[in-house]
Image: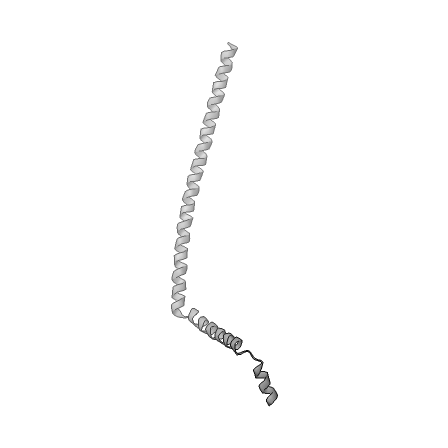
Length: 98
């Protein structure tokens, strides 16, 4: 029996207490996180995130549409400019030929 008591002396009380407290808080935390009130908070937060996601996607869609319009306008400007330059070069060539 004395040998058994020597075994208990080797146990670190501080570490054992910290472990026990961790288990207790972990168990209590699981109970708190799975409560009905916590689920209401999770649901509310998820709904908020979904609304924010929709808002961000709407803004991104508008930006993409505007970028496409800008790109199409820039292409048209370059095509008009190239046509005007070609017309100018043709007129200049005709003037030299005469």
